[in-house]
Length: 71
Image 1 (tube, rainbow, N blue to C red):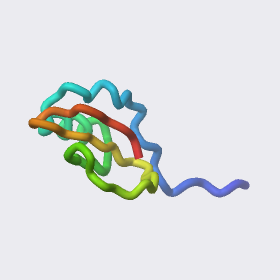
Image 2: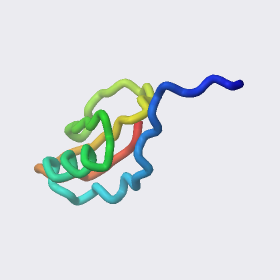
Image 3: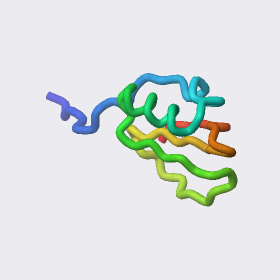
Image 4: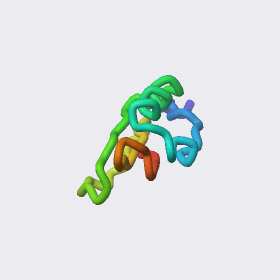
């Protein structure tokens, strides 16, 4: 028997659906859709490049999501 993953599958979601939403509303929606980690960052932030399953990232400018990516 093959081993089973202990990491739950991240939600099947379209990152582009968050672009244009206000940051607070986008975070609430992401959590309601099952994202465990929601990270909001200002434009040009220096971040690590590791992929974390179950995380969604928002780039937020003037209170609105301008870019969104998974991991």
